[in-house]
Amino acid sequence: MRRPIIVGNWKMNMLISDADEWIAGLLKNSYLTEALDIVVAPAFTSLAVLRDRIEKSGIKLAGQNIGQEIGGSLTGEISATMLKDAGCSYVLLGHSERRQYFAETDEIVNKKISIACNQGLNIIFCVGESLVERNNGRTNEIIEAQLSSGLANLNLIQLSQLAIAYEPVWAIGTGHTATPDQAQDVHLYIRAWGKKLFGTNFAESTRVLYGGSVKPETSKSLMNQSDIDGLLVGKASLKIREFCDIINSLF
Ligand code: 13P
Image 1 (spheres, rainbow, N blue to C red):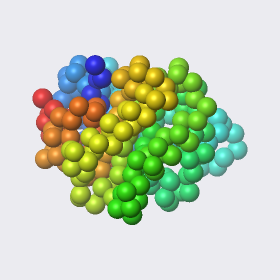
Image 2 (cartoon, rainbow, N blue to C red):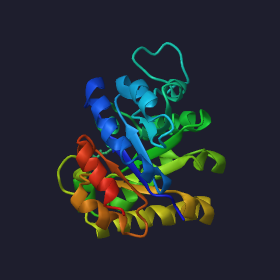
Image 3 (tube, protein in one colour):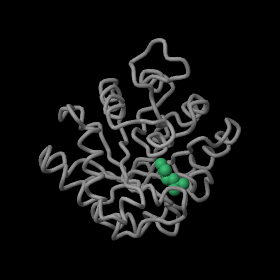
Image 4 (cartoon, protein in one colour):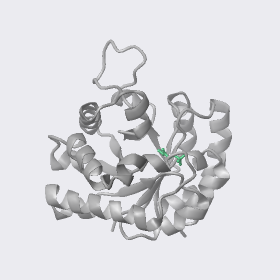
């Protein structure tokens, strides 16, 4: 049985003062962490503040990125160790916005996943096709290519720290949530791919999240699909009320 997981990705939004008020709202629902993982991925600047607020609540913190080296002279970058130091147990990697706007290749994503695994972080590895790719019937091919390159040379122990997020690029920030059937089809494909490459245990234990315009109105029907284990929520996570409605829609 895979434990459900709901992740809020704030992207480049929210100030420290916003974070403080937001987390107060979420803490009222923190008893739900007995039943599912609730993870927040704020901007780096809000991490330490949130770490102090969520202490012993069961809520978890994620970084939105790490640098591609363990440490050193890389001005402006944040290392996996720094994320852990700031209270993170998770990191998002391979997000399409990083691929699109920061030229992150599959090779870079693979390197970051490897570093994050070795530093003991749980990884939420994002994959997803563009609209043109979907319309050309290339969804599975694109997903498989991203998975194969992103997870190259990782062993089963490292892979046990992995969750995969299917985030179709055409659904991110557009208001067009994938239908539960569309998402389920790709999740099933991802699981079948995982089984072929890494075996039944990996396929059955690895959580696969859906992300892309998730809203309180769409969260339940998505989570009702047998291969959707969690949600990666962008815009709707910025309003604590909506984020809590998404969490509560599962019960
Ligand atoms: P939206 O929920 O705003 O579409 O963003 C999804 C996303 O990219 C989460 O990582």
